[in-house]
Image 1 (tube, rainbow, N blue to C red):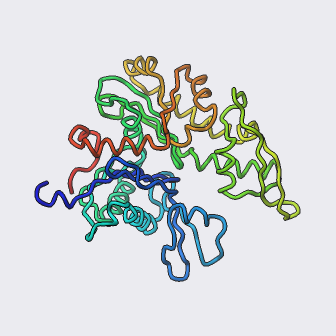
Image 2 (cartoon, rainbow, N blue to C red):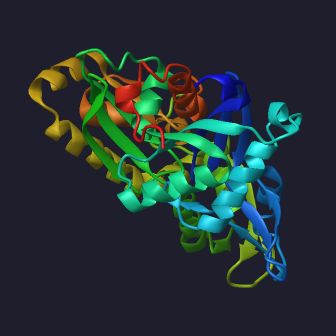
Image 3 (cartoon, rainbow, N blue to C red):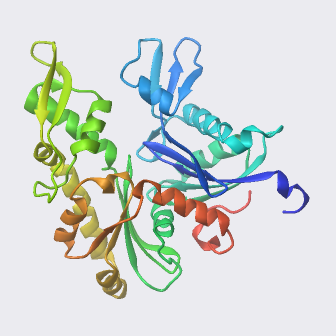
Length: 345
């Protein structure tokens, strides 16, 4: 602290497998897909975020699109560092500065992360001018973002379904009492849809098309009150090799995703079975909170509610619950000291 404090900027980062969000001055200034496009000849990064996402599945051999994060952790160190660096450089308020400011950062990480993976995240942040880097577990950030008072001696259950991992945690007194991290989330749902289209319709669709199907007509159960309309899907016919179009309904998507959602249900049940009895009593009264993009799957809350016999609530703006919580933590570092991993370097 002190004289150089005005040179320090504070940013909160939700480094996700599918999307990266950054908060600066209480505003979400970056909300981009975590994708990088690299030129194979020169090895240079030619696009990140939205621009790189548009190239996905449409590149020629000299351009390669990479997703630097896999299952919530850094898989490609170099690409992730460049991606974080470019995202930070694109923050409007920081662009105007003459010198790159030193940064105080809070970054959220999956709860099932190893020490080595944690160090990779930290080092990436330090290389992009992070002078003070703090880490926070995703379910904890999600709970703070939803508005749960995590410091109370009261149990709360959070299920955060992101792109790479589903984080389930029971939180009380500012700590995680029991948690489970399963590698079944948005990406697995997308792959399930690709596989279903191949096996049931002989249609080969790309990742982007599958993602579109998931968002437009994705469902976790076949009995929806307000079912979405059928959707036309274009792709390549596996038998003839010609482009073709088929109509699919939300019921088919629900069938395609059934096995993966069962795994999430089992993980929730397992976490509940490990919960101490006093906290289980609290959860019976407060219910389960859902956050993350995967929680927007139609009928998922209803399905989890039937499985657990507990009320299930979806956070408002679930996609941003985690980054909101990370931002609140950044503003109140002293209050949430016990929650953060890694103090000043």
